[in-house]
Amino acid sequence: MNTRTQVLLWTAQRASAAVLALGVVVHLITIIYAVRNGLSAAEILGRTRGNYGWAAFYALFVAAIAIHAPIGLRTILSEMLGWRGAAFDLLVLAAGVALALWGWRAVWGVFV
Image (cartoon, rainbow, N blue to C red):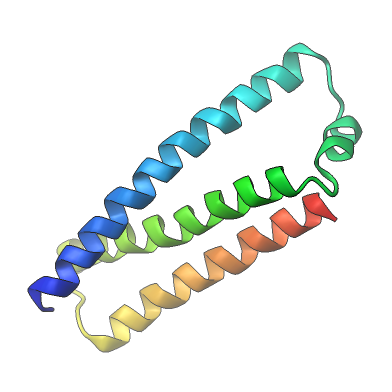
């Protein structure tokens, strides 16, 4: 892998980590608020259904996960098992696409 690709992956990993950190904080604050106010699942869904702000927030959260996790997985597996090459990169890309599709499906389910 060339140096440019390594720099791009490193940058994407760090940028997605920053988005995830902010997303986790907002998500935890939201959970604490819901629990302290005794909101039921139906009440929570009532607040998220059709809310473009929450849909956008969680869609961004999912995108960050779909970028961050496969890059980390790629690094760990290549270091531990010595896996490399185009086929390995495609496998990790497929994992990222699967995470994105599953996550956005969940966001859609909460939004609609």
